[in-house]
Amino acid sequence: MLPGDEKAVERCLQGDDAAWEAVVNSYGKRIYNLSYRYTCRRDEAEDLTQEIFIRVYQNLKSFRAESGSFQSWIMKVGRNLIIDHFRRTRRYQQTAGTEEMETMNLKDDKVPSPQRIAEQAEASRFLMEGLQALPPELKEAVILRDLEGMSYLEIAELLGIPEGTVKSRINRARLELAKLLTKRRTQVGMQV
Amino acid sequence: MECGIVEERLSEYVERSLPHETMVQVAEHLQECPRCSGLIEEMRFILVTCKAFPTFELDTALLDRILLRTSGRPRTRPLRERLRSYFLQPMLTPRFAAGVGLVLLFVALVVDLLAPRASVLATVLSPRELFGQMDRGVQQIYSEGLRLYTSKNEWQEQFTSYKNNLLGKLGIMIEQLDVPVEGKKKATEPKQPEKAPKQKSSVMLLPA
Image 1 (cartoon, helix red, strand yellow):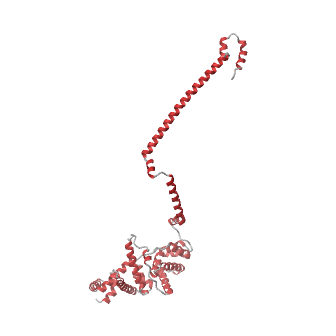
Image 2 (cartoon, chains in turn brown, green):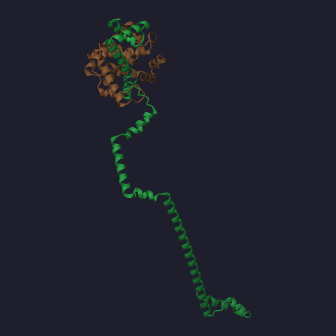
Image 3 (cartoon, chains in turn orange, cyan):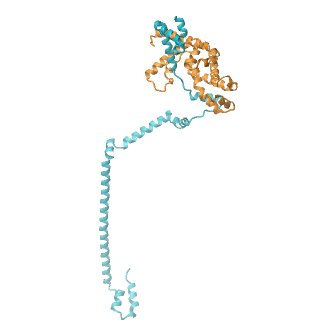
């Protein structure tokens, strides 16, 4: 959808519902997963995804192709709404339950063994617990870089901060996370 | 190199984006410092776990809700999904499952009551037995046909004999009545043509 994003937006503005459906199909999964990374709750992630797309639909006119790609714009809208949601609720979510983690669809196309699924679920739960303990700006940096796979430049554009600051935040976040995990491992007795 | 400086560069070290010399220096420090090497192991674990972190597929119900609340137009459903909603979903209901279960139970009971045992059925339906039955059937039909043909001939002979017998008796009766036949009259009395009407009237008096 990336090369024709601007055309799709134009078509959406002209009232082409099929084009809008294509936009939602293209970015729905990404926005939903981004919401889930922040909230760690499926119901909240669904509500947030819906809110984000409603906001995007209402503000399509404000998108300017010369200011950046549609992907950056939609991610920015999503991120702002998620931050607003955090401020509104004034709390940071608890980690997702182990059962929920185990029922998630894995990225691998191969069907993993039950033991592997259990290990991955445990590792993911461990990581999510660590993420929740991080300060919001550090957590955000790890989510965007390591979970969403965005480049430093994209994150810098999205957050509106210099690339050096992004790198510094990511390093600090990873370091904090590593320390937290080491501490937890010694408590639980789990090996790397 | 001190631990604090190494910590600042751990992330870039893991991503291999440091200059070569710095990479070597950090590596040397990591070999000596168990604390920093523990941190780098944790950092690698974080990256690996993040890469393998599960992703959710967008639920179609959520997609429907989004589209209805934005454009107001329902989602375009693929053919497979439409077929599924029209045919498969109505079948995947508890009521349908209960109905199917009852029907299967009924069929099983009927089969158990009416059909012969499986082994007997297998014996009856074996090719040898089938051909044998066919052969016996053909033999029976042939013998039956032969019997019918013979009896038909017997009946025919009997009928012919009865007919001849009856005709013979009729001939005797006619002769006993002593009524001259027209042919005979002509042969015996050719010289009396004036008496012919009388003979004709006498023939008319014969019983039918």
